[in-house]
Length: 173
Figure 1 (cartoon, rainbow, N blue to C red):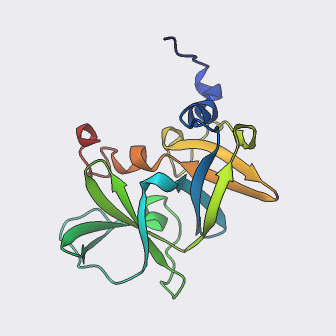
Figure 2: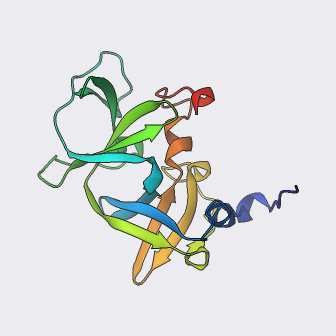
Figure 3: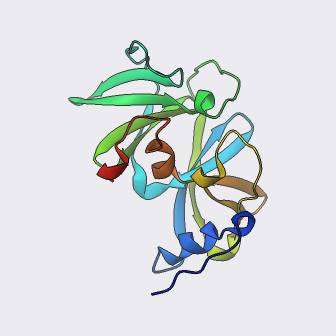
C-alpha cells in the first residue's frame, strides 16, 4: 500500500477525507464562532446541550472553562472562542456545548451556535492553505464549500488530543 504525498503547502487532507468514507460522502456538524462557520466530523458528536456554567478548575488553561457532571461523567469544557484566540462573547440562549467522544474521553466544546449537518462530496473540499492562523493548519482537514457557504473543517480529534490541550492522552485514541 502506498501513500500519496504532496508538498507541505498542497497537502491533500480533502482526498484523505474522501478516502475514509465508502460512499465518498462525509457528514459534518456545522457550528459558528463569530462570523465564521466550522465543521467537525458528525461521528465524533455524542450530543448537543444548552450551555450551563461549568465548575472552574484551578490552574486550568484559560480556554478550559471547567467541568460539568454529565450523567455521572465529569466532562471538561473547552471554550472554542478562547482556544482559537477570538474575542470573548457573551453566552446567550444560542450558545451550546457540543459533547464529543474523542478516544476514550468525553469532552465538551462551547460554540456560539450549531447550524446543521452538512454532507460534502470530495469535489466540495479544498486544501487548506498554509498561513499563520489561530488554528494550526495541521488541525484543519479542508475548506468545504456548499452553495454560498464556506466551512473550515476541523480535525477535532487531532485538536483535542494535542499536547497544548492536555485533555486526552494521544495514545488513547
